[in-house]
Image 1 (cartoon, rainbow, N blue to C red):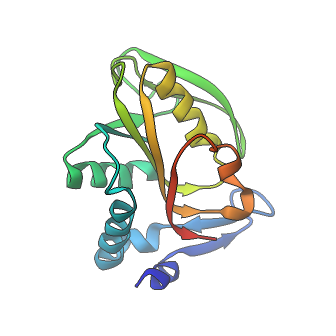
Image 2: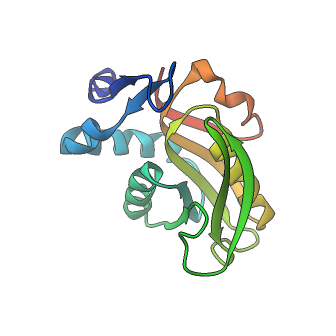
Length: 172
């Protein structure tokens, strides 16, 4: 079914900007068997890792990260845009595929020495997860890996993530 998973990913040309092919996961999420299989394949790739917490950016990263956290009995920490978290935050400024951003996390979300797995739906340039990794390390966390459902290898995300173990299920 792994090759079959790609049939659940819809390609949308020129979104959000001209020249980009957006990999839309919503058809996969809508189908319970495809979604369950995708999550099981993600878990399979990191089953040997020892970690305490899963960290993910909004919004689609939350879907996979919280599901995996639930399945594995791990904690889940959301990373959000400015003004979206109710408690005091720490943040990092970064340049992403479509512009600059700030990524925020609650200041008490990660304790010194916590082992962290970063999960996202799509690994494009690696900018978002690289920024999250730096933010986790700034808070004293130890990033043990990065996991994505989809990796866009033609954008060379692993160039930014050389210091981390990177796992993905589908590669374009």
